[in-house]
Length: 338
Ligand code: PHE
Image 1 (cartoon, helix red, strand yellow):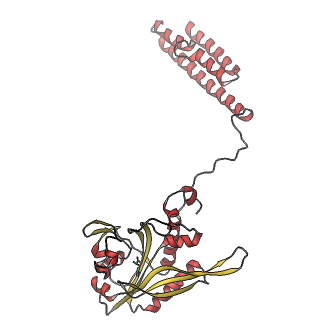
Image 2: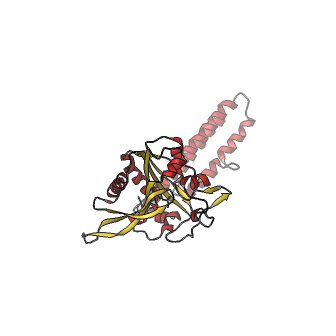
Image 3: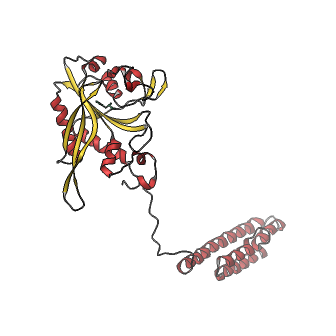
């Protein structure tokens, strides 16, 4: 059949032209000459199909499609050869350049501290608890033995959403929520975000993380409290760490303490040096009034609690001076804490 023979000839010519093309531009001109939609020789042939005897059409159509496919394959192959050759010798591609580094996410430095603190308390038998960031005056203040005329409950310090509803100003409401749901023994760690009307500066951010700890059981004493926190500090900062309990006041603990640590750091010349005392948490023995507020028998049960700021711990750990850096999400900064 004449048309099929013509197609074969056309295909041979086209493949030869494709192989002979020496640049991508030349190759493109060959493509247009044969496969171009309007003037292309193969396309023209396809249009002629309509003039054929109906009996011949299927075989000719199949041959034309085969030719088209063969040419497309040859074009792609030649283009690959030409661009690879350009890459090896031409100016477009420098194979000696270092490859781009793969982007890898990391755990936020404050969350790393939370994870490490949690790991230590977990090994001491604590479980994790959580509570809502939007909470009520009852959980945030009243149940914690904090009267609403206490300065902390003032709108100057606490972010209210509506009367009685607020963004929790500490993680201590999780103490109440946990004790309402469970009977002693209780040993929980509750990390989470808290909110205060603070000015945004190097040492304050209006939203920050806290970690709450609470232990309630029969026979829990101040000795358990001190020993557990000292053990935590030595596991977290190293065996040489010293811990100091300074008398303080919180409405929900009695007695209350602020806990400071003095760390041992290794200087650049290899000598060891003690740091200043740094406050790491507020803490104390749970006030019996708080235990009564959740229906516990305060004659039978005693407990202790603490609240710690992991962002401050992260500052110490990395020698960072400005808290805001942890919350600005600049990847050049955050990417360093792998
Ligand atoms: N909730 C207190 C604060 O935010 C810290 C604290 C927790 C103190 C538990 C004592 C017991 O400052």
